[in-house]
Length: 79
Image (tube, rainbow, N blue to C red; front, top):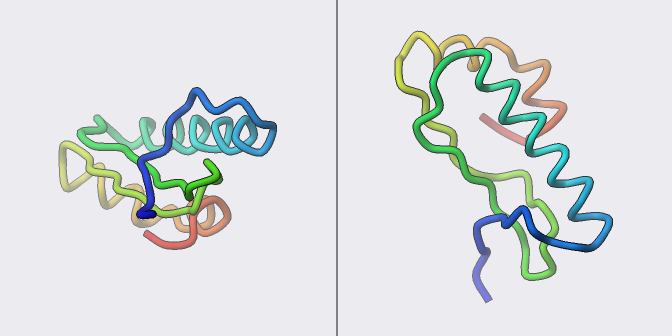
């Protein structure tokens, strides 16, 4: 079955920690600028696969995030 967009209402503990991690990532990205698109994928079991799409409103905001790899590498596999 193909990957599904991550849903925040998962009830198992691994999903809860994944949800916390996703919220932290989203809050981190918000510091750079306005988020236009933000979604992350999960496997069939609801586990975060560390892949998704983040689109920011301006090129300047995107550059800020691009140059913050220390956080992104720790929290998601790739930019």
